Length: 295
Ligand SMILES: [Zn+2]
Image 1 (spheres, rainbow, N blue to C red):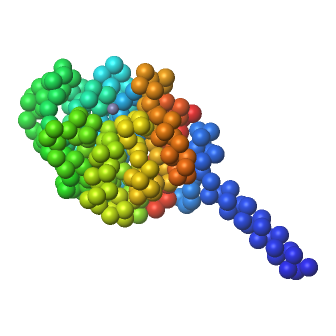
Image 2 (cartoon, helix red, strand yellow):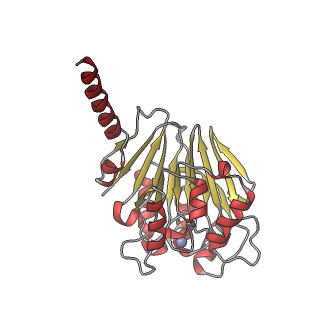
Image 3 (cartoon, protein in one colour):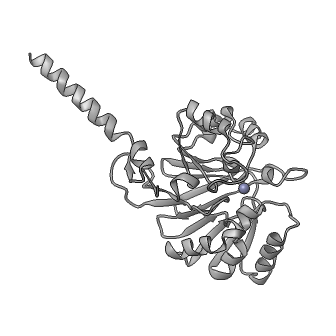
């Protein structure tokens, strides 16, 4: 009898622990999903819903800000409104992964409206008005340090570490394939920001790094989840629990691709899409993760 009671108690404990460990249901419904514990000394990463483009704002534990990409030109106000809303005055590092207009669309405006200390961008050029605007803004703000975004460059902000894993070289590469890929480490938590890096970049990283080096808890998928990124081999090496796809509602490119979604599902990677879930907010103390979506 005692043994039977013990078994029932054990089963109940198992059910409760399974429920407590499943943040997916809560996240998708737009509520906060606590994996465990209280978040202290937190780092917040917001994958901002800027439409068909990328813009990720990191609020560091010491209160500093890092911005990865600066949204879309056609949705100018969205980026600056978000930055104001989240209390940005100074940006320690603005990382422009590459020069396509859905990533540097509002970069010039950000430089004019906020104090930007460092800009990291790939060693390449573009022939667009958006790129020219960015260069003019950088010329007008000589105080900004411009850093070449290439594999091997590492920087620290407080105790948050950023390592650039790609590109190795930019000559002869398409704009997407020049994307600055960045691995962020905060205590035990790692996040991989892919820009619009594509499958050839993923293969190159697989050939140059151990799977342990590529491992991350969260990946911002390359190229808005298109089929040109997110190979199974690469995602298996990174082995993230969560994936984030930044894309616009009903976008004409049909991002994300069914192929990418299938790979994510096959590998049991829970994914969030800014077109469906709105801004995706991740809070972490370096150990626990708390993911919140808008919808
Ligand atoms: Zn893009």
